[in-house]
Length: 94
Image 1 (cartoon, helix red, strand yellow):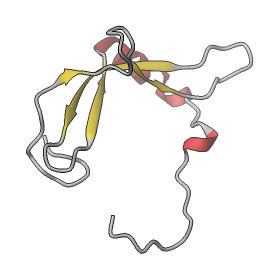
Image 2 (cartoon, one colour):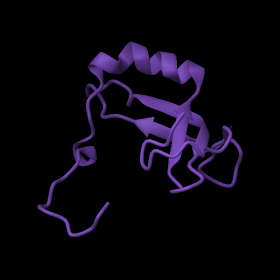
Image 3 (tube, one colour):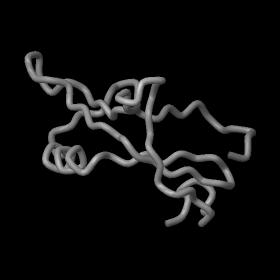
């Protein structure tokens, strides 16, 4: 596996990923609610790798959540503020 940001092969082993001080707090991938009374599709990431060269973090969904995401993928709606914005040319190299 290589880093998707810098291309390095120097990735850490898979580790536990939490989002807070409590061990049960996990990062979650959320999408817009598909209807007024429908629940917000949410998928939990509990493991991750980190690039040892650039520091990029690569979270992984649990196997259960990966299967749920696969089943729901065609019906997911991108959150409005998650779409990339283009503000014109950038002077920064990355």
